[in-house]
Image (cartoon, rainbow, N blue to C red; front, top):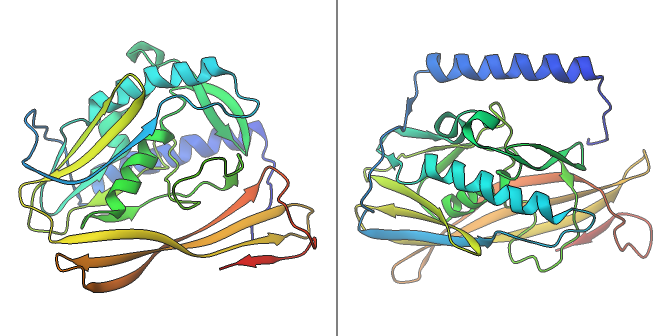
Length: 273
């Protein structure tokens, strides 16, 4: 059951330290083989590509945060572009990007803290983790660690993907990890144009499957503490080259505290299928 939680500054500070230490220990002691190699030349076959606009007009968000986000995305994309994911290896978003500090050129960008928009060094990198997660759902690669957004901050204005189809990130313990359980080599390509953040998963061999990501359930609940929580489940249809349906897979579920008033006519739980 989700509800807003107020924690002291001391609790937040110590919690970050503890979780970050735990992640450092995992990176070096968990026995995983983490992807590290890069290749300048793109692999021959495009598995999936997606792009998202760099600048969006968001309610009550200053545009300078959006422009600073572009700077942060450019630095982080450089760390990830060309990374090769070999069979049996795991892609770790934060292990590859590293810390986001002023010394490295990162600037204040938009961050979400308990559902509130704030500024923070390296802010805006969730756009990159969201992009990579969405592309991975359209590939044979397996997401082994992903964190959903616990707050739904902005209404669905112009949404083209299902609610909850992204992956939040926070250095270093809210990580995005992807494992290559196939026998093929994959490569992540990410770069910025003047207007968009662009990503590609590429491979040595052509894809034998196509993937359709869709929302099967979507409902809003009115909670005892006075707010609303939004829920949904995301599924994936897998088809072969002859367009035959091979699988209809449950992928994830999402639960997020709504930071705006939903349009509920009855003031009670409403389910949309």
